[in-house]
Image (tube, rainbow, N blue to C red; front, side, top):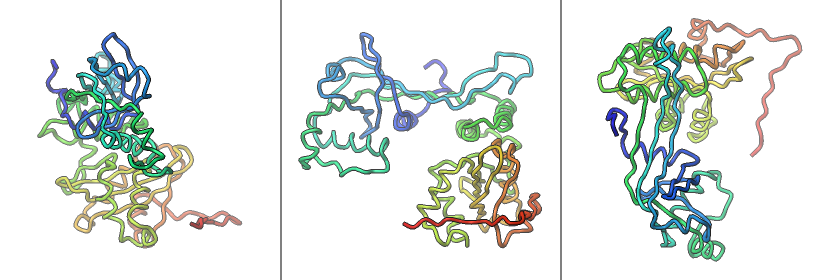
Amino acid sequence: MRRSELRASPETAYSLFQSVPVAHLVVDGPEVRPVHPVVVDGLVCWHGAPKGEKAGWVGRSAVLSAHEIVAEIPSYLRHPERACPATTYYRSAEVRGRIVAIDDPHAKLAVLERLLARFQPEGGYRPLSVEDPMYAGAIRALGVYALDGEPVARAKLGQSLSDPDRHAVLEGLWKRGAPGDDRAIESIWQAAPEGASVAPRFRGPRDTRLLTRIPDARVGEAVALVRDEYWNTDWDDAVIAGAMTGSEIWVGAEHDGRLVATARAMTDGSKMTYVGDVGVHPDFRRGGVGSAVMRLLLDHGRVRGTRWTSLRTRDAVRFYERMGFTYATNKPGVVDLILRPTR
């Protein structure tokens, strides 16, 4: 790899293979086929028909490749006239090696369970078992394959930019507000070299950094900030977590690697936005962190364009009034209704 700053960890490669819906298998010849990859015990695996062409590829050299576009970066984010800075930020991964067949039924089972967990996470089937007559024959007959090489990953996320140029890209993405730009900002920041400065817009008070999108992996921290609030007394942690990760907008703040604030919103991007689950760690209240997170949420690209933004509160009216919220005027004859489905 000529540009060493683009080299990413093997964990990045495994993560990408585990997240992309399709990777491309290039077999010497050459032949190219899409496969559904999963990672099991450090091997990138896939399945195929027992008598399909993939079965004939065992022992042949191959490359399995996957990529993810993080953001398209227009040139004017860095220069008002030159076209040269236009680029694409991405992650990519590949494994080179020989195709091997996985014949042990229990090893096959592990791959098939991982495939089902990825592509049918809701369940709806009898658990797989090599002893179950309904599955035993199918598991023995199904082809399951892997590449025996070590994965290599690349990530182009502005690592070589100076702080001012990186800040310009981050600010430009935030102002653009296209779908995925909030996540791209976090990816770019996470890839920045050690010692890189935080862009001004995302510097929160009390040495916090504002997060344009809280990663799903940190949902446990976010739930802990709001689980004991009055509006969540009817919900368990799993329901609260699902609401957070399922929200199009989910911002926050961190301090020394700890999540200290969270806020989420649902929006149609045109008529309305609804804000929920705003929470700040007790140690960071009354210091401007909550206000900074709310201002970030209200400035999100999907919220800026809506006609009105609403929320409900019974103990923070003054806080939200300072953010510009006012009492809603009920129209004559209009009644707010709520449906609570039976379970």
